[in-house]
Length: 189
Image (cartoon, rainbow, N blue to C red; front, top):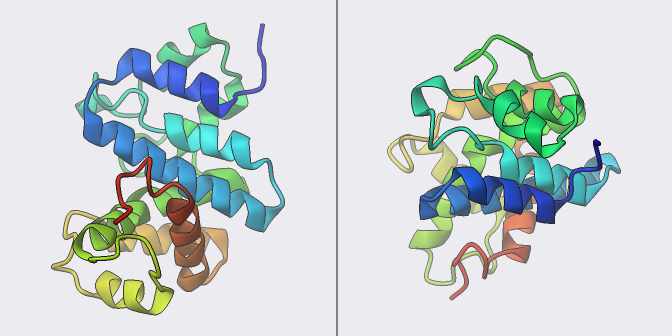
């Protein structure tokens, strides 16, 4: 029996397959950004947030085969095929060639996955955390390739291009979403 994927269900499922705190923090950041971006597209924010929460469901168990075990972990949980394929699509061209991002949800996930890492790193270095973060200052950090060096800027740019939005717009939604969840992300000061 398939039912709509809720954020509560996504959290329950991820907890079965993940133990590392940093992966839960990343899940929360991507979930927050996805929920905010859903507003831009007039979509279901909770559903998008649930997809964001689950996007790395197989990462801890299968780091070298990421996105290749999503289906086997989520089908038994009653997650529908469309949601499974959406999650798999964020690894397209990186770890899988199964499905390119096609929908607004999939393109958004592809774009914000790495971008949330830069936002998170910037919030950690700011005395005020997420409070008052502006796109202009985030863009400066984004241009500095030494800052949050492991976050792939080219991948972010590719994702934003796929979305057809300006990078500043996507950054604004990431900031907005993560600000709304700063306590959960431990980024409040």
